[in-house]
Length: 240
Image (cartoon, rainbow, N blue to C red):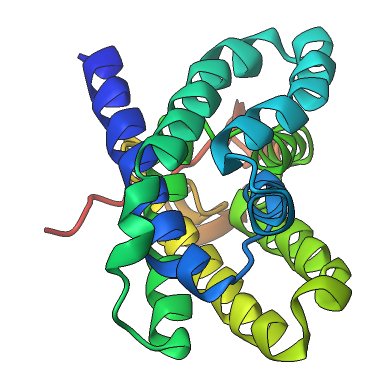
């Protein structure tokens, strides 16, 4: 069942990426971050297919991850191939844009963020910098959406000489919208635990004459009648 859900998430996410890139970004020559941004630069100035360039440039990152995290590699490789395929196959949508640059920048960022977030939720990605961000997030317990935002922002800032200040500002709006949406959607598909451990409690013990409070210290205690261990946990039921 999980693999069926993952397959649907990859296909849906890849289609959303193709729509966001081709329908909203390319008609206004806007940038995105990561390998998608590099693919867009290749499209704007060398008329090369964005998806193919994204796949080729992602290969060195996949070689690196292959040696350090095989599980992440095998979960992610097909996501990169399928998303690159849909980015190129949906290129005819570039002629359909009828919205302003400001609307296209935000809408495109939201749609791309939905696609990337869905893929991240099922442990796959579009490759390249998204894969690198996911690798670092797993290694150092960081937020993957924040890492993607930082890497994407640096790539767009480096392209200012190529796309100009105005397009760079709108491209930053695309990245911000995409990062926020990625963060929201990347949590889908993860099971919610039935309880949350939030720390030690005060434990009330009776010795026959008065009540005493004991604090959990992971150590042994003496109450005059014997020794024991205090191990406490709060079960917080999910609110419906």
